[in-house]
Length: 293
Image (cartoon, rainbow, N blue to C red; front, top):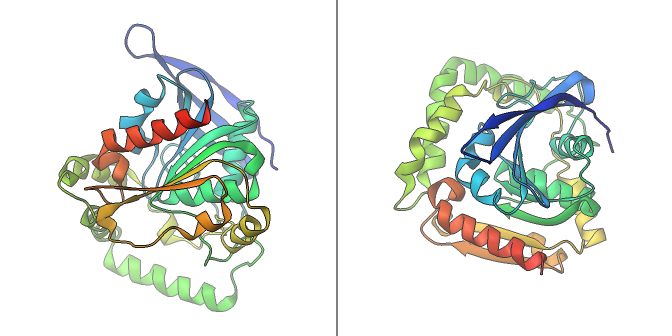
């Protein structure tokens, strides 16, 4: 487990009469830093964002959840206001989150992740189950078919990435971003247009470092899947899926989660927390309250 230190004291930003949002930076391995925002009191609750996005995707959860919990929404390394990634520095997002928890003196916490954030939550569930009070994985889970840090990139994969990067540069980053926005919008239901503008704002601000570089193994992937099967962690877990994603069957992770639950939310797709925030918030808060009884 990697240790870090709090390198910038939180700054109080007045929001209303009494509630405050506190902002800080935490040092992580290799001279990097994670930006985070924190609000509320009580048991720690971490909100983990999706690829190409940042902590702003949780705008309609941050203050709502902070009425009941000490909510922290970090930007992953390489996204938002956190430092960029490096091609020469082995790291995982899960280890960065654990460093954040150590720096904030959280022995354990609730974790809610969506899409890429759910990949990270799944890694934490498998590799660090003792750090989780409960886990919500929405629109994603463990990347069980992907190589982990113990399987470095070989020459064939490196050549393939060179070709992909060259093709992207020829297409143009802005075109790639527009296509990605359309992919995120495509699975939505009747309320999807409400998320178009905030999604585009984040995607537009995104540096697009990841598709333009050879990333290290950021997820434990197959290693996490093997560990999950061995450990069968007793962590309470809720897996959420949007009905408009048109996927069928129970998530495979539930076979190894004795306290796992699954729910499908109607009339929403991949970005369910932005598309149907009331529905999403109700489902997550109901699950979290079950764990505190």
